[in-house]
Length: 448
Image (cartoon, rainbow, N blue to C red; front, side, top):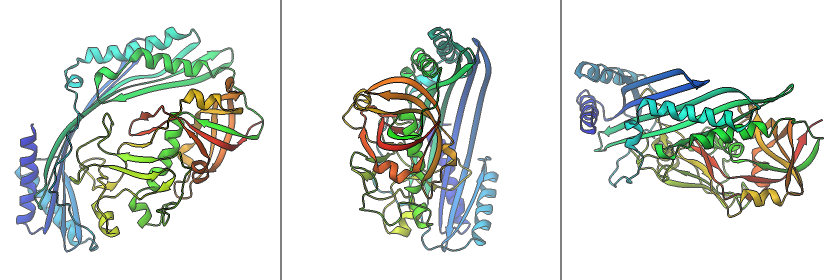
């Protein structure tokens, strides 16, 4: 199906809803395809191709929202989904802030669909995964086990139509490689991983990813704890992006309005050190989550949430923006056509600084370069408290000296943000979240 067909179906659903008595109606139509190829020992182990297509219908009557979805896009399927959405609205609690966006402006032109992803043969995609595995094994004889070597891509087409005149459509695609492995020496074994996701097939470098994963595993062989102490801590981009993920829920207008955000009531106040600027940008060039509009048809935008350490505001969809008396930031995110728009991040990152990661480490007299944390899912996103296992490389006089494992770092995300004294220029994305290297002036390490 092309964009004209999708928009016609969505428009048909909206017209049926209006004719059946809906005051406001919105149809969200999603079509997606995902490919996953996993290889092991230079053979294809798994290949999955999944396709999904359906329409979610939201109607609003006197502040009451009704939602239903269908995978049947014919006349009878649309009639049933309209009937179900209307029935659901009749039993919903009214809320004056429910509305639909009225869009009069234009959407940004974004380069988010690379035809080469679809044009490439399955054999070529398998070869990318195999080449990544070969590069890892060739890097060092101590690479013993490839746990996962995978190629993945996805293509989506999104249409949004509402009864206020909004009609919008886009198509996007991404691709990626992921590798995790184990290095072993004697009784010791250590893990390593690497990944790259991109909007462009040509950006994938399987040899580089293979070597990177292998190097990360090998350098950790012989890792031991250090003594408990306070020391400088440097977070590599992957770990820093993990901590940034803790902040994401707290920076949504929904969390603030429900009393679940540690940033509530702090707009205009210092919440991080001056080098820290946190941004969500739904139209970021090359961003894996870039799109011209969100799940409600609102144009995406760059939203600076924390600027030079000072809280600027929050992310909003149409509902939370109406409650707050502000404009939607274009962050009405949908997981699929089976759900209504929640507030969520797009390309969410810490803006890079001017200093290289090498210089950041060179300036550390004594500290830990953290390359891995365990238990991030146990951190409390409402209070910001965390207690995590950590591993990495010990730094003495600006040089890596030995691998470290079996230590713990604990604290509060607000204290961590307030102690950042250097931000690297090496911004790296891991899916929709990204960060450069961050240096924390001092943290408590619990070791041997």
